[in-house]
Length: 307
Ligand code: PAF
Image (cartoon, rainbow, N blue to C red; front, side, top):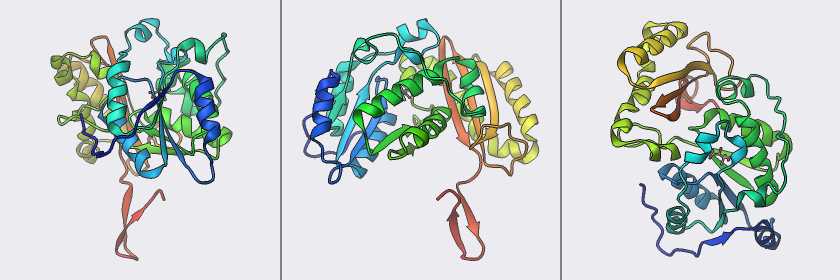
């Protein structure tokens, strides 16, 4: 776990109720103070720590939320076994210098049954996670909407490990909360390459080793793309998982990073996305294919394609 280099620790104030969160929020002067927000479902790890550190660098106040959101689980068994460790999570946030933690009960957020929103972001919400986890993104947008409306952050930090979730949050937020800046943060991996995830807490040490096939496949894509088309790489990956691994591959897809349409050529701005079961634990990971920086022959410098 990455250590947080904070010398003088501020006090972590915990809100369990919406009313106390709102009392605090009303007291913040938006013109002179900025709020950075990190929504999570807890079981915090170094990936979350990196989001908190970035928010601390960029904002006056850092607010984290821990809420295992039932409406985004498409299988009740997954909701039941989802790791919950509020005490060690609070300690970690305190050590990181997080200022506020919102940790409500389910009935505080959903006092009555509320219908989930209907999403219409084209391919973005219908493929991959959208098709394998029906209702999942609707639940994510539902809770992000509730939390954004309560916390009213200036910036909100999301990890790129949930690449499709990040794209959907960006699409939703640009429509409903254009004033909130969504800050994407890079995937944090274990030394061996496993993408950090709260669900890793459910893996045995042996399973963590078996799961490394995911990052190995993703990092070999550069080499594979030199001799195979995207279609050929896809079938190679399926065969490789079948022959070489105990993990059950749910999907491996190569898509455009902006619209999630199937990738036809390596020249496009692509992303490889993968979901696989390691025992009963579902793991996801991804890898951007196009370099973010290209050499500009006019200026003789690296040019940022995105910014
Ligand atoms: O990525 C997560 O942990 C969750 O989907 C989120 C964004 C906190 C919403 O519950």
